[in-house]
Image (cartoon, rainbow, N blue to C red; front, top):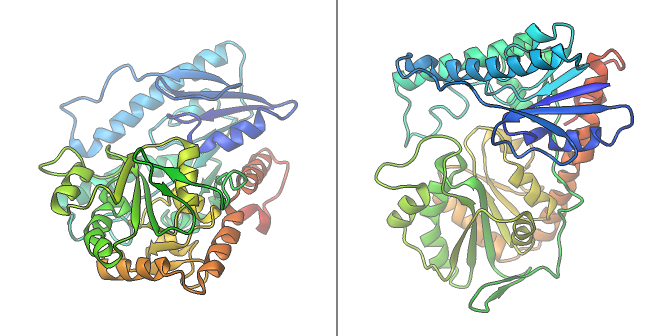
Amino acid sequence: MKVLLIHQNSPGQLRHLAAHLVRQPGVEVLAIGRENAPGMEGIRLLRYRPHRAPSKQIHPYVFSFEEAVLHGQQVLRLLLELKSQGYKPDVVVAHPGWGETLYVKLAFPDTKLIHYTEYYYHLEGADTGFDPEFPITLENAALVSTRNALHLFNIEQCDLGIAPTHWQKSLYPAVYHDKIRVIHEGVDINRLAPDPAAFLEFPNGKKLRPGDPVVTYVARNLEPYRGFHHFMRALPKLLKAHPDCHVLVVGGDDVSYGDRPDGASNWREKMLRENPVDPERVHFSGKVSYDLYRCILQVSAVHVYLTYPFVLSWSVLEAMACGCLLVASDTAPVREIIRHGENGWLFDFFDHNALVEHVLRALSAPPEAAVLRSNARQSAQAYSTERGIAGYVKCIGHVLGANPATPEFEGG
């Protein structure tokens, strides 16, 4: 069987599936990604680069669509070259969010196509317009609505879609729901577990261990979509109320979602200027190695996770796998995995006082803390890489006619 994996940042969310497939006898795996994609050892990666940037004269509403067409065009050229050499994949599994798979069916009309259906935009009930601090304009609304043209094209042409959460599936038009399976790609719970011997040591000799009053916050980049602005506004009150706690903040200064702040080079700089904190107690690590990241979660007394109604972060599941006590925003994707009072605590995304109260409560090591941590760890088992791989493999078998859809096939 020939499997072609397409992701602009290959392997991206397909990493675990790729690692599994490449070990299977009789399975040939090939990958396509952009010129700067990291790739994966043991898998041949064909890199592409759009032959030009989108036109500066194009209407701004369709700028991203022209960019997608340029991605799809370049991938099509690669596919046609492969086809001329006698290659034909049995199935393509891809993240189509940047347009890479727009023309896969032109090269291989009979090849089955599985899409990672990550997100479909809405003007209400999701990220757009959620935060009143960043009100949506008519211009923004038109731009966001037009972006869905690519996602409609993608879900229409694929043979099957895979959404990581039920909420993300629900965002797609109802007519396509039967076409989408809910399977999270999973996190490596075998490498993520509580460790009473874990410790962090700072250059000044200060050590933090499990049981110390440590508050953690993680995001790929520190930005409003992940509630960084509200977290920072809550810190002065928290630090004053608990003079012994330390706060570990992990994340970069780039922007993954949304815009850069006015008057500052990044959101960390802006929020520190507006909410000065003691640098001896609030530690910004930037982006860290996986081993250090895991250690930070293992020494955490309380892990704070905030997000707009948007794509769920791997970090919240990784924190749960490490047995963290979760204090998280009561937003749609979070409610799918955290049940208030059972495996964590939820609070209103905009309520700084509630955030502080829950964190202080967690730092006081209440009797229910051990139960919440244990339940969080148990909940994370449902999002293991093994379960994710099994779901993806069933999807591949299904589109190839090997297995019928079953309730178990849904994953979740």
